[in-house]
Image 1 (cartoon, rainbow, N blue to C red):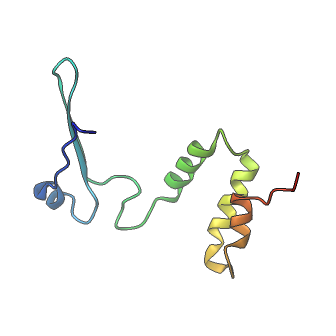
Image 2 (image 1 turned 45 degrees about the vertical axis):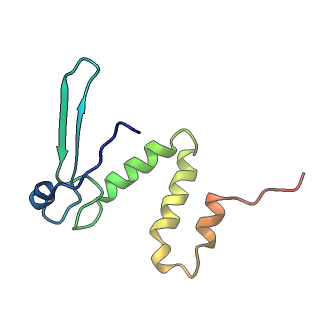
Length: 101
């Protein structure tokens, strides 16, 4: 972390319009430079998120922790939050009550 330098790049921001651009400039152990710029990162679109990208990421992150049916129940609960009276149903899926020992 001590070797990181974080800076704002006005030119990068200008070229990215309304997105949240990012860039990394690194040097490998062999001295080879690596330069990457992402002007419009997925998930940071001014037009909203791409649903399939979000679902794929959620599945990838939770794949080893949730069975597909449990993951689908969480997705369904999240997608219904705009119509839900409370978040109780989603919270029960995320943190089920434990039975006393």
